[in-house]
Amino acid sequence: MSGKNILWLDEITAHQREAVGGKAANLVALLRSGFRVPPGFCVTTFAYRTFVESNDLRGKIEALVRDADRRPDPYTLFARPIDEALERELYAACRRLLVGLPTGDLLAVRSSATTEDLPSASFAGQGETYLNVTPQELPHRIRDCWASLWTARALAYRQRGDETSSGTLPLPEMAVVVQPMVPCDAGGVVFTADPLGGDAVVIEAARGLAEAVVQGTGEITRYTVDRHTLAYRQEGREDNDVLTSRQVQLVVETALTLETHFGRAMDVEWGLWNGELYLFQCRPVTTTQAERFFTQLIPGDDYLWTGGYLDERFPQPVSPLGWSVVGGLTADLAF
Image (spheres, rainbow, N blue to C red):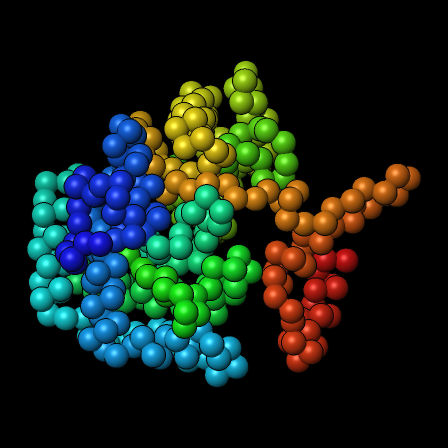
């Protein structure tokens, strides 16, 4: 286990996953295999652990895990000053990272938990990501990434996957990946297994940053690509050709190379800038919608019956009070 607060991506070894978390470990694997990954550094789990211990937070975190009814806001819990020595290290690392880069002086800050991007559970979207962060904002955003390990959403996800730690098991820890912002011309995600079922490769793309696709805030164009012939079907507004045919081919070929490298279907966040393909995140596809949701087409019926809508939005039981508020809205929207 590393005793350093900061490790650079190009110096991290395959044996340091517990020090840098799943997301950083996968980025390092990409980097070592020759894929284009923005440079960066990782604020390690050692720094996280030091912060937790110096602020006497471990007992409060254990109580937060145990007591769902009286759970404090984790962001308030972690709203304590970062050690001045660590702050100085962070600012020095930012200066080293950003010097001479054509991408500007803004940062992308992404959580990298020890329970993240596992072969059995991706934990996608459970930790925080912050874009366009200034070096002065970095300590605050690192604290927010640490706190996101203990949100109700993240705890519920770990409970569903039997990954929640109790007092008898080690608590998960959070590292943070810091990289320069890449001002992408287009970005998105690519799945080497169609989330809706089948073996097609699926690209979801938008103009600008990949985050527009990840957060669902942009106008998305979907490309469903035959993995053997690379022929594709495009869905979206007809005049919204986000990618050229050559770019579709580049994204798919890269994704399939990753699938071969990792030995399983992959979910990859990517971006195009100045004609180059950058990879920002890479995680295993742990399940498809067809596996997660009850879906049945009854012969002679005009309806497809599925539990997907409710299961996706309400993965945990809804309280009577909660259902009294959302039940009518759900019926109006879905049915």
